[in-house]
Image 1 (tube, rainbow, N blue to C red):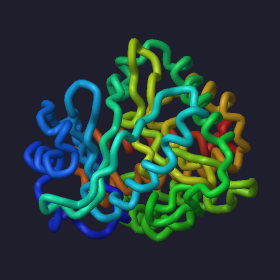
Image 2 (image 1 turned 180 degrees about the horizontal axis):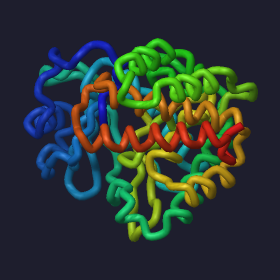
Image 3 (image 1 turned 45 degrees about the horizontal axis):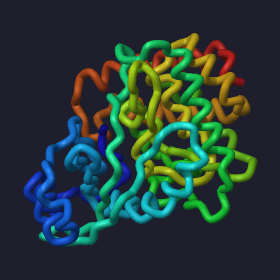
Length: 312
């Protein structure tokens, strides 16, 4: 996972988040679990560092103040959301407090078995797309009363796409001659032309392959609700272009039954993410990330030009 470029401050004030730190925190606050085996979960992520605790639990520690804001939200809302969802989600077991030189609250969760989603471990991509759409539909149906509105806690997921306008245009300036910036700008401005007009709905905020767990080739769980909240669900559509291809994307689109403007904004969210990666504005130089982002940009532009069935 790449860092959120809007997260601001670095993590230099945070001690090394490693097995020794986890052991110290457990010894101070949850001694009943301090003797259990601890091992890092790979890939380690950016927002949080995750460790397996024994066979049935995990420890999750935010890496910076911006991510620490999410701990209380997950502790409060996940137990309320879980009974209304068709797939497993993380179950909070305990909430830790700052200690051992570590400055943030942190969490212990029930361990969820599964591999992160990849094209090569999914048996049937259209069935996977349907299952994910069913999950997001169920999430949207949950009563949003009192839910967390877009803000710093979730980097404005569910809020107006215009929040990223300056960043997107800066990325386009950096990429002149490398991508079709004129077409990308037209797509972006089209995405900015509408806003969510209905009641706010629940959204996950980061429906990415690393947050989808697969067991026996099927979608089994959705994790990492740090960017969840209520608002416009367009940001949850990014996976349509990152993971799915034409047939499975169309199955996903039909199953979600969202209006064309929301899909247009979904293309905008996806374009923003892909552009900042290609422009080197998201803290990664992984050639595979850049290559995949270029692929995604090409697909988005092609759909925009053709006014594909998910478009206007």
